[in-house]
Image 1 (cartoon, rainbow, N blue to C red):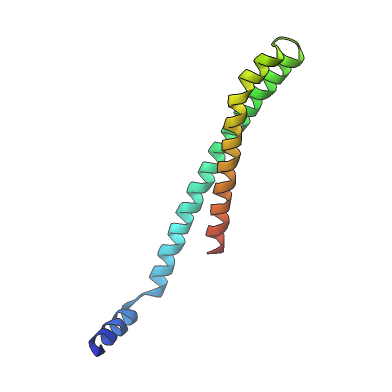
Image 2: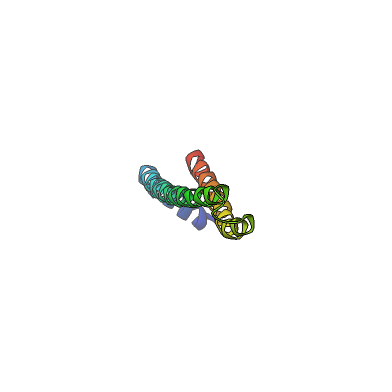
Length: 101
């Protein structure tokens, strides 16, 4: 048991806290940058889908397409938009957790 305590004490003394802190900061920065990139990509995709839905709505409003056609065409975009919003929320939650650590 004494040997174990001596080994732990030796390892603790050799531990470079500043080096570990730098490594943690670098890793947090990498993860934050990655999350920001993910969120930006999702926002770009969200904008594209929103424009498509707006165009569909305008076509429906101008009687270019029927209500049934609008519903049929809009449904996959609305589902995709729902998933994008969920992904954005998840990434933002991860960002908050990172900033609190």
